[in-house]
Length: 311
Image (cartoon, rainbow, N blue to C red; front, side, top):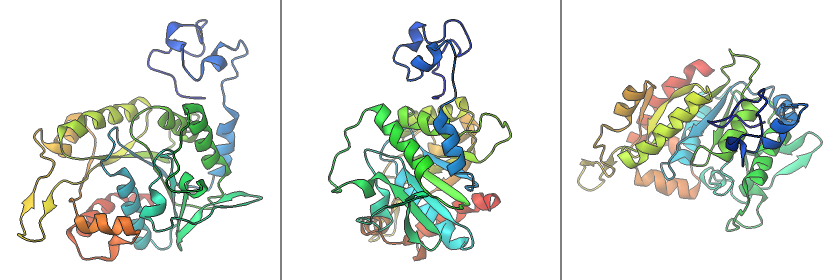
């Protein structure tokens, strides 16, 4: 079942499924059922499929174009190289804009199905990936689906992929705070264990206020859904010119950027990554940037220090 909308009358009230706030809610039919069969059977399937996944990280941002997919790839690449004894997975739930196959250099690979489910595509010895990009006939194919079909695909990814044993599963999400986010949270969150800390969020932003406005909404989404926020990463914070050697702010942080926002909203600030043309080029080629000597890799190393407690 999806999490309750903001004005929900409450699933156990007489008005459940009948109030004006219930119109259009995907849970309306379930809530109006007098038997109140509230538990989605898919949740048990997801729990069984992910029983050997120790930690799940949602990579979030209310704003599009801030680099969630790139951050997901960089964190996975760097942490998997640093912790070679641990296993990592990426689930690309940006259904309409899957980027991970290209970023990780496995575009064109096929997903195989066995008795235990879909086998994610192997990227490195300790990294695997599942994305709808592997299921399309062409990378140019458009996904034109309504919310219920996208949510059904997410449930399949969570319950029918044979992830095996993972120390860390990173979920690359689309922008916003709507269908896909509510669906994945409802399936991953353990409502019966208040001490469950296996589901956490990483927020990605750029420095300018137009991005921070939407990111604040994402932070409030996490707080309402009781998802612990590991911290905020500020992407594209500065640009280092390869010709003159000077640093410039392409996206001016006129309100103090991510650091000031984190202080205001009482969430951890993990660090910043520069706008790096070399990174953009290697991402397009699906190559690994973490082996290079660069300011980006140095900054990434500092950010990844915050994750040592998860291994």
